[in-house]
Length: 139
Ligand SMILES: [Zn+2]
Image (tube, rainbow, N blue to C red; front, side):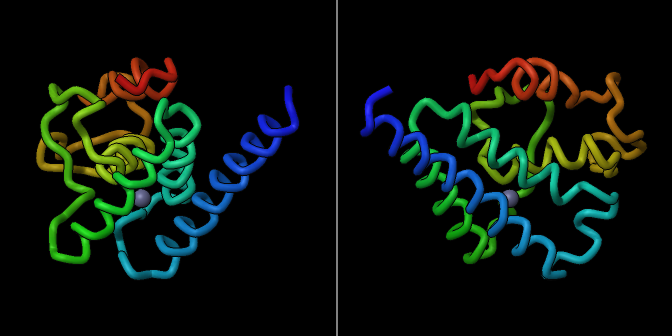
């Protein structure tokens, strides 16, 4: 590995860590009470963002999408809301991807799945965990 590659790798590792820490702080401040009722759910949400950066083929695009998400949240759009489980993973915004993973982990009830069990492999959203997160597939 060249010196430049080592420096770039180090930069991305620091970016991932900063994303995890800042996101954790933002979500853990209590701004969104009852959003993460299960212990560890905030961490799972933030680790999803780390996963997004780790496996993105275009890091600047991922960072820009995150900024767009936060801007949309400021203007009132619920960026954590996601649709039915037929939508391709790549068409779901970064925050909604985080919500899918943390709500599957926590067993958070949604309109589509009103009765949920944490980490249920029969959950209609489990295919995202199996086919995208675990398979390291961003598509
Ligand atoms: Zn998030």
